[in-house]
Image (cartoon, rainbow, N blue to C red; front, side, top):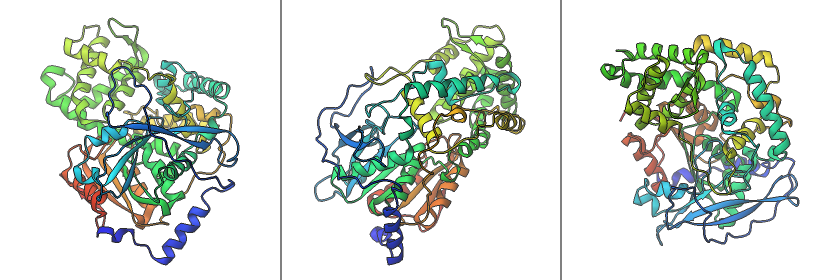
Length: 507
């Protein structure tokens, strides 16, 4: 197709113009962004590495786009100028998702995986979204333990949610007291920040690659500013029609789809692990172990860390995101099973457990709870949540019966039920209005953004998008084993070629 995918009819162009004009409902026009002054980047966490070619700068944006002349904040932006003279198409803006993950060093990470044909065409641009990392980082003042239970609120023994209710109320109160401006740190305002970054870069259009939550951010930007989008890649997708409680509910089926990949590995190593000779038996063993830990947690030798059912499930959820962590995950199951039985784990199992529970080195100048604070800002600030405590208890009970692997966590009560402020605006509707320039990459067995969510993103964009599905597990598609999906991605970014119709890659 080449560049023909960028050609729009007069009607589509008019619709896009209308959508862009209405992007800032209730807001006042803002002045053009000042060009970025590129220089030295902020300090890294201990042990972290950065591409030496990367430079950084800032873009000043309104805290509240409805009051553009009021308080401002700064967005940290980075660049690796990989594009070659005479071959440069534009810039490729990158976002790793989260919500709450910093993206300042994502250009260096992507530069290692993208082929020359893409790097020659684009300068790679990263940024820490508002409130995250080095962009006026926000904090609710939460401890490490509070952060984990806030993101993954597993019910107590038997599905009791009373502890979750108390914890959710406390977290909401802490955020209200310590971060009263969180209401302005939303997905829509972050998308508006992207538009300011585009202006500051001095380009007419931007290409974009978003992962996980970053797919929703990209979809919001592409809906608010369709006329300023070039080529959009969305990898591991959020369903924009289910923001946010409905999206979390998809985790139930996502765990059912993904868990067997790890269970089969454990079953194949039954002689060593003893967790079951079949994936079904391993699954039953895991569920029984997690339930047992709910009633009687175990302490990891040499630490003060107590592993209950919720922590085991949370570690499992995280390690299911990548194929390379599936084998270590099975060794963790074995180690925890041994501890629960009063036995010392093997040296290999203990090492895997220690690594999984190790903390991440702090980034200078960034609060410890920054990611969870900003995850809450998006989850609770983008849309309203039910304040009926009883409705969460019913949801947990029903989900535990149907999806025991998730144990009711996705539908459990969160701080959003007690959030002090209502959203400052409605969620942005993702529609088919705009150019056909969106590539939706989705794995068939993704526990974080399940298959149904990828199909939901594709449906929301309509004719604008094409879905490239991969018959594999994990949260990331590109560079993880599907040569078919990789070829489609590179052909789109380098040549503008989208498949004529949705494509399902079996290799």
